[in-house]
Image (cartoon, rainbow, N blue to C red; front, side, top):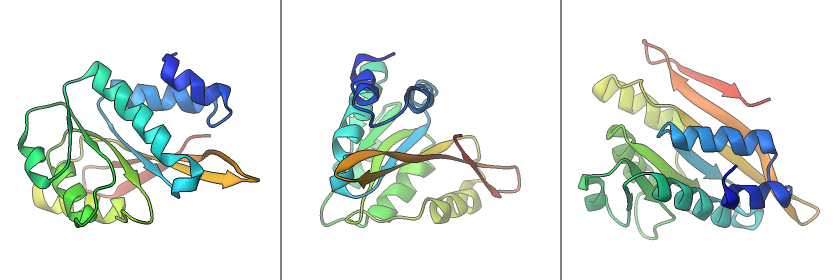
Length: 163
């Protein structure tokens, strides 16, 4: 297992199964969204996933919509102040490239809405999207749930939780 990811397994932030699942998603150039409140450890976890993606693929750190024009295989999108984050995510998803990003109260978006719009605009259903929901209990942050979003040929969104 990746050394950076092993650290989160050792700290009981995520299970080995969850870590392997997330690493596999990155290997497949799929989109990974780390969701939760800042206190639930989403930023350090997201930063680690970005570092892993960046070490494997040509990646671009997105700071504005103009960065979505750059040639790469992965977009790394952290929290960006003073921007319509849902619109930025919509445009990033439309590229069909892998994305590692965050979903915090400061950066709200609906992946369901984005996927529906994307399907109507270009019919693209090739990408898989993974929502990693983080929580904090008794002061200890952890991965609470991992959900995979895909679409069928009619654009219907299919959700599958990692058991």
